[in-house]
Amino acid sequence: MAKIIRDPVHDLIRIDCEFALRLINSLAFQRLRRIRQLGVAWLVYPGAEHSRFAHSLGVYHLSQLVVDHININCQSNGGQAGKPPFDPKQKVIVGLAALAHDLGHSAFSHLFERIARDELGSTTKKHEAWTMNIVKEDPEVRAILDDAGKAIEVDVVADIKAILTHTYKPHYVGDVISSQLDVDRFDYLLRDSAMTGARYGSFDLAWFLRTLEIAKIEKPPETIQTLAVQGRRGLSALEGYLLGRHYMFKHVYFHKTIRAAEAMLRAILKRVVLLVREGKMDSPHSVISALALKQLPSLRDYLALNDFQVLSWIQDWSVTSADEILKDLSRRFQSRHIFGTVVAPRDRVEFRDKFDTLRALIGAEKLDEAYYLLEDKAEDVAYKDYFYDVNRGKESEHQEIYCTDGSGRPQPLSGHDTSVIMAAKSVLKFDEIRWYIPKEVLEKAKTSLRSYL
Amino acid sequence: MNTLERLQKLSDLIAAVGGMVEGRKKLHKLVYLCQAAGTEFSQDFIFHFYGVFSPTLAADLDRAKAWDLLTETESKGTYVIASTARADAEGAEDFTVARKLAGESAKVLEVLSTIVYLQDAGYSGGKLAGKLGELKGHLSSDFARAQELADLLFEIKCA
Image (tube, rainbow over the protein chains, first blue to last red):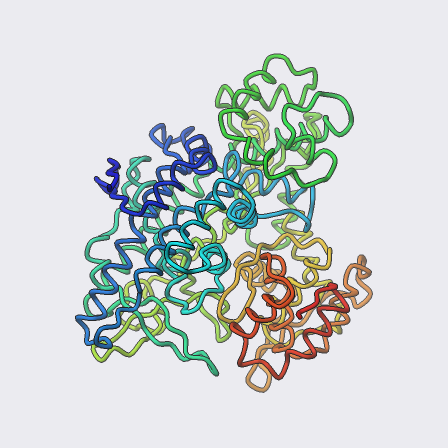
């Protein structure tokens, strides 16, 4: 029997697949209720409290819609008789991959990835690797996926692994979950837009779904089948989607106060790891203990961590910590005294001069620059490949977006001379670097920095 | 690693492998393989048609060019990225793997980086070999050399 779930973005989400329901009810998936999709964005947008749980349900819902629409769109465009692009087994696998895609996120999503990378270097794991660990090794999840595999006579775990590592063939199946036109992006844009109240991300999903199809792209010596948009009918919807991504990036994902708060949170946890390592405080959690020993935490310990635990710790530290830096940073975070922002100059010499000035200011206040002078850059935003790269050189490394013409021939959007996106490309590039420092230091130093402001 | 250090490290890498690298795709593979071998590069990589690449590295290359740490010029139909750093750049001992791989073709590096990526994704032995064939069968003439390097530098066996 189908389960119907109400959702503020998609109204009703229908789940018919027995294995999808079992996966949703698993402990590993239920845990996503305790991890916020947008980290600390609620400090700026109070409505941004939505969880990765809700987002993952939305991604599942859209994955099924996209599969159905593409099958219909391709057949109505004269596709091969009797052979829709997605078969029923692939629809199930795509749905399960959609549910699984964010299982590997830890507290504050990408925050822990950054801290682990700082502590462990190249031996660290990204959340995708943790996701694969959970898919393969969590007993409950593995049992569900193995049962699904027996039911549809497919190695579901291997197929989900291939989809999540971008190695599934045909490409368009994996593209549904991860590409420039994936359902992950569709859902988070719509959801983040709705829950923050920043409406930029609201694009015309219904029309967009009508115009998705499969195109054959020559990537010599291969021919690759990938998701594409019907250019004649879908170009405006595609442009709306890309502009929505740009504005959401500018006003939400790279919002200066949100990013400054994230940087402070990283500084807090970085301090904790150091204090634990030096034996100056007890570890609050086995994950911190592992990082203090420069080791990867176990899967079980990793899954045991969520946003609410970290916030609770910070509340305690703001009052009880014996370490002045930890207490100060925690108190600032608790009371929303978020660091101020300084935008780095683009010129190399000015960049170095301004950085040296900031270092001197921090030093004059006897603050440790490792915790009070924090750097951030646009490409570090959690939503990777945040914007379709419109400024392409001859050897572009990025994923292209394809639009088909009236004859079904695919053309890259970057070569589309009537596209609004291409006309605005110099404006749409975003590559800012920022520094975050305590506001009171910034205020005191306004005279020194006046020439740079 | 802050921006200045990160960009300088890229320039030092290119200086350490003879001062130039042919093409951005090859540079992406070199940085990825150095990172996999333990050299600290902070860029994140994802997997696309031409193998591993990093949006962060792409942005860093543009910045490094703007800051005159690198130059990029067209030569015989391809783009050559050259370093403006000293050949004996400080920290050059980090780049042993890069020096060993610098003379390999872009296609061998594409296969090798795919092998390393697949191993990192949990494939091994025969399954890794099978997946490699599925993804990069059009580069099969480069498999033997890439597999030799995978064994030598990363202790990955593809059978």
